[in-house]
Image (cartoon, rainbow, N blue to C red; front, side, top):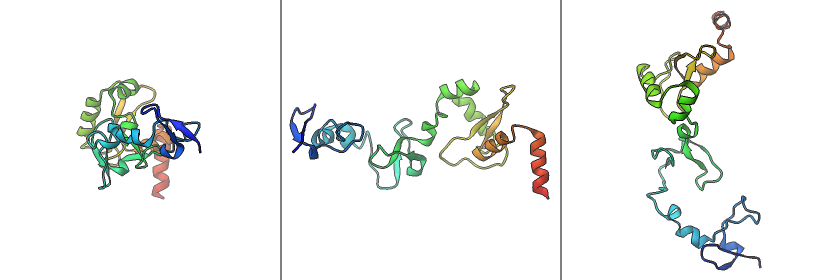
Length: 174
């Protein structure tokens, strides 16, 4: 029978006393099941609350959100990522908005509030999940507004060319 030594309790234990983990050469966690269970993150509901109501707490923003607001994550027991889609997308961080568009999260929120939390083109209302996109002129870098994913992609596929967009409208009006 193969054995392994747990670095925490220093005991030599059979491999079935270690959880499976593909990251390790032997396919098992480095710490035994007993030691892992003793760690706060596996037992303390204040740190990683377990939920049976279909919600989860984001490890970054601390908000309790529906499980659908988290990407699939094969490394977590619940099958979902640790960060919500907003935090994982980086749009909730000041540094990302500053770097890409030269604005802060407060300026983003203010602009979006002026649009009544709706897409500047189609009027789709933001409910939850992924933040809307900052639309900007790629030549002048001037920010035009906040758009939903579909409107942002439509403008991008038309290469921001108003002639192409007019032709698209004419085509749809046939």
